[in-house]
Amino acid sequence: MSKKKIVSFLFLLALSCSLSACKSKSVADKDILETSQQTNTITWGVKNDTRLFGLMDISSKEVKGFDIDIAKAITEQIIGRDGNANFVEVTSKTRIPLLKNGNIDAIIATMTISEERKKQVDFSDVYFDAGQSLLVKKGSPIEGVDSLNADQTILAVKGSTSAENIREHAPDVKVLELENYAEAFTALQAGQGDAMTTDNAILLGMASENDNYELVGGSFTEEPYGIAINKGQENFLNAVNTALETMHENGTYDEIFQKWFPESDDGYVDGGEQ
View 1 (cartoon, rainbow, N blue to C red):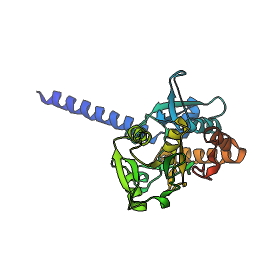
View 2: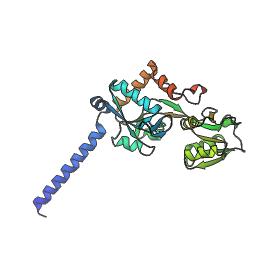
View 3: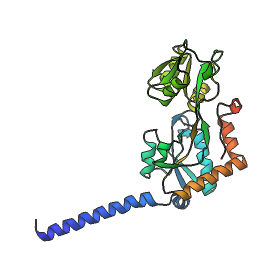
View 4: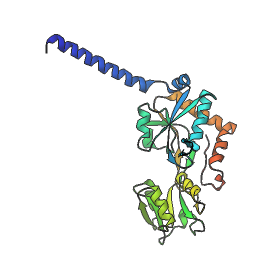
């Protein structure tokens, strides 16, 4: 290869790298608040498989739930009544990468605020106070975590913090770990355990499917849900928090909360305060 061709090749390579860096930088540095107002759209990462919070309705082909309605209300507060809330399905594994890559503007997907996650993203104020609880068949002698004893078996999901927490709070009980929530609930209905434990938001969804089951004893851990936003997006973060505050003040939040959790007076779920 001639010297001239080598120089040309290196120049094109440098230009390509420069353009890639600029593109990457533009995605990371764009002002989400400004962009959403220009496009009239906020793109939310949501769950599609979590009853009461974000579940795909097969008949309408729309995802519905508490998180969805909160996202729509926040969008209206920030952009206006004509604002468009766009929804992208996420899982616990994909939600942060999709946010970091700029595929979504924010995550509202039963996401617990934690110190570890704060290293990667910023969180809004708490919009839902969840916590670990117990699901039992109605009429069960179990009234809460303090009433558990060595003769009882508690169902949990393998490798979950719920399994660790129940062993800490009720060290005498037997814990049977299943592969996933569906298997654990099936095992509970089959009588393989006396109670199932996990986040009360998930348990409430299961109880809504079968009237023979209920949550007992309130929650024995704290799992505050927040809306995750990319670091460096203070303007957008402040706008989301202001929207949440306004929704609490004007009753919009309570209206949405009661729509999805009409029997919340039992103390198992608390919408929290901003």
